[in-house]
Image (cartoon, rainbow over all chains, first blue to last red; front, side, top):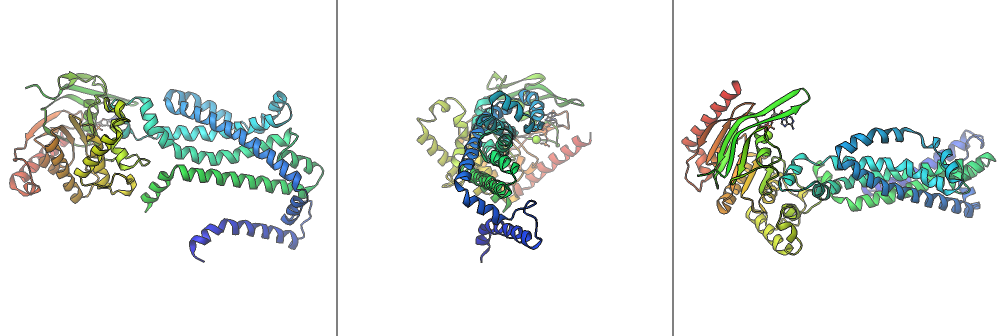
Length: 257
Length: 262
Ligand SMILES: Nc1ncnc2c1ncn2[C@@H]1O[C@H](COP(=O)(O)OP(=O)(O)OP(=O)(O)O)[C@@H](O)[C@H]1O
Ligand SMILES: [Mg+2]
């Protein structure tokens, strides 16, 4: 097999290998199923109750995507504002760091109190947990304009907005798209945390419910589906990143070679 | 005759955390219209600072700067600039990098859409004169360092500035490419007739290209010597092997060694 096809196949090979090792370990060490379920049990549960799993997977997916979309919108605006002026940057940074340090799981009960049990607290949690990397990355991208290039443009009479539009924002795009990959996985974490604590649907809700009644195969099935959704969305945004910021990948490649 | 660039008794202090740094002290320098001026001096003496002052990016702490009889109080909007680093925008094609100043400077800015075709033709033509015909649709990363520096020169000239400010533009290039670009710059200057202020550490470069070489003292910088170079124009690279040329370079070298000591 040539190295390129091997590289393409390797994510699949690794995933399959992990499932096989997991399955074998369960058999060889005779692990009690209440401690660890084999993947085959999880897949079997998935097929048996596929309608249930499909429904809850769908709820988690759309809730996450709504929270994430809010985070992208808000993150772009805040990132531009923070990147615009050093004073705002310095003023807001400690606040944002402080906010980001608070575990969102600690806020969820408050959100449930305010918005009631359901999708809204999950959307808000997904939003709160995922906007931070977007803001930071946009602000960083804007802040890394080469001073000499800025001089060239300013000497020509370019205002701050010109420099932002011609240089800052295009320069920040690779950072922005890079942050989307991180943010989307965080958004899933936020959704599931909230669903676990107070929801009527979603994979988090399912995990809490089935876990409480010790139907562990169903719990594993839900976890696997969640992981699958995360990988899928990550791949989507990695693809978008590649597409929109080819120049960044190419210029790095040529710099390396 | 009134000087085109008139730097008169200029002092510039940078405010630093550990006290002020006086980068320039009472620097006076007069460059005539159409002159090719080179500024040389020890590292850190304030050459780049001088460039920033002339283009209006900094205000002098004391003294005045005037270009074409008008005092500089803010960005001059008419000078072209190029640096050691070509500073290309990697997401733009070469031609769009060259066109960048036209998207900023009036009156081109407001005509940019309507005159796009004309502007592009002009940029292509400029690229051709620096030996980059047909490279307009490439991306900067597909070009060598020397080629990128040519593009950077085109970008600094696309809006037909009356004043070109160059801060060590060829410092990062190998000797052969550098001499090639000397000739490119020489030809552009001779054809277009703009005024040049070139900061350089390469004394041969200064002697080959300039009408006058201004030697600066160590920091705080000011002009300590003006050396006129009288070789007839157009100059050929051959001139750099003449004895007179070697003498000028040697004289400058001694002078800079001397100001570095003091
Ligand atoms: N933004 C700044 N803030 C504070 N000090 C500065 C700043 N820029 C330059 N300086 C100081 O001013 C002095 C002159 O700097 P400048 O960059 O003009 O030197 P230069 O002659 O261009 O040097 P080189 O030949 O190494 O490029 C230096 O001592 C430097 O430390
Ligand atoms: Mg310098």
